[in-house]
View 1 (tube, one colour):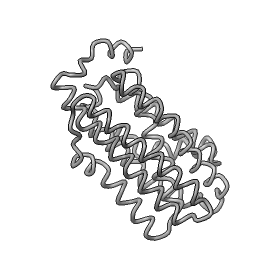
View 2 (cartoon, rainbow, N blue to C red):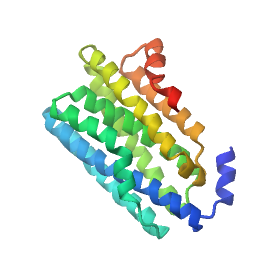
View 3 (cartoon, helix red, strand yellow):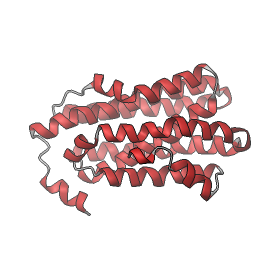
Length: 231
């Protein structure tokens, strides 16, 4: 695997690495912060699942603190302004959907798109991470699968009534993922993360999630291809 070989040559203390890391680290910190807020909001929208969703929110808060520690370990100040702009479109769409009570759209954005994006990024990052960050990230990935599972199970149980909104939400939000990936391609490469591997891992995670919810293989291919030309 070229990624594993790359980790040997990476200088985690170099100026170029730490500069790229300031943005990537900020993205994961902001992503976990927004995920915490999103699950708190979902707990209001889904009172029957309130305790479980608040538990997921607490997990995300712990993840944020872990990734803040990763930045401190490399003496890097995360560029939080960049990270907030990075998530602005997806975050804005979640907030609009929440304000309108569109739970299905909220779950697609947070429990499917963001969780699959995070899992893919962490899977690709772990082999090339410094020792401290690797241990933190390995623990986080295990938790993220349980977050993905909540969205899958809820949407599966409500598939027939959710299908049309899921397709509309996918059409609006999935292209944003490819724009986000393109924005950080250069920084990710400096960290030893291959963009094609990231795209592939995301497509696998997202496709499996759509399939688990109830979409046919043909539907999954059609939905997953939305905006892929931009990748």
